Image (cartoon, rainbow, N blue to C red):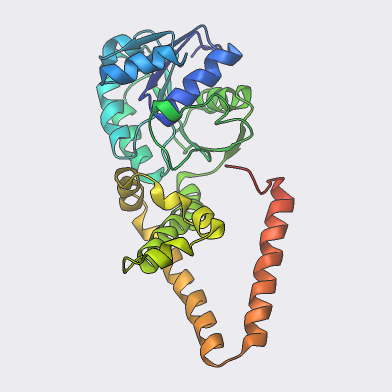
Amino acid sequence: MKNTINKLAIIGLGLMGGSLGMAVREKGIVRTVSGFARRKEVREEAIKRGAVDLVYDNIEEAVKDADMVILCVPVLAVPELAQSCLPYLAPGCVVTDVASTKTTIIASIERLFQNEKIYFVGSHPMAGSEQTGIQFARKDLYKNAVVAVTPTRRSRASAVKTVVNFWKKLEASPILLSPQEHDAIVARTSHLPHLIAACIVTSVFKEKNRKTALLCGPGFRDFTRIASSSEELWHDIISTNSSAILKEMRNFIVVIDRVTRMIENKDFAQVRDFLRRSRLLRNEWISSTGKNEHSKR
């Protein structure tokens, strides 16, 4: 396994892959960035936006002689594309991804690579947007983002180091988690909030009413922004992390029921105390992580 990355191949040139290529090329951390995209208009846009040096419509050319391959595609497409890449990967190649769930896809890919000198280490950058497509790519998407790197007992230590160092060079902050711990945590911090936002939109707009729409202010818009994300993307996320998500949904229902009882009992002092505690918890999170009110992370 090489200590330096001469050729990086990015498979999938949407928001995540396009932004990755732009960041890598700006920082000059590899010699060549090669990309793969099926659609001609995406390949043309990738060149136009400076996301790649070379771009192909076939995987063989994209990954040939690559030292590192990053799969920037929806969750359920990751194992499929890993399998498509495998016959053309050079021995010692390190493969990672940017998918939002880890346990299921890592198990599939480790079985696929088990007899090969190809090394997979999962990644999940906590960065992105409700928008999709390379037209929304930006070179600072990963800057200051936390990136979960999810090795297993089968992961090669040098491959883990390569992946961690790669994200550090993009000014991201990698942390090591097992795939199972990662999925349990993001079910609470990412997947549950997305479903809650979708439920709020569905509840508020259960009847078409222009007055209702007009009285949805900036707070409603900000709170429900993520409900505008791709349902196809989120289908894959939810279907591959359903057990952890169900656990968090049930815990959330307990909280909702508790607040409902406070209001039913007209115990508004308890409601006030609940709101105070939630405010303090949020402020503590903001202070401890260095995030600010305008961060997109």
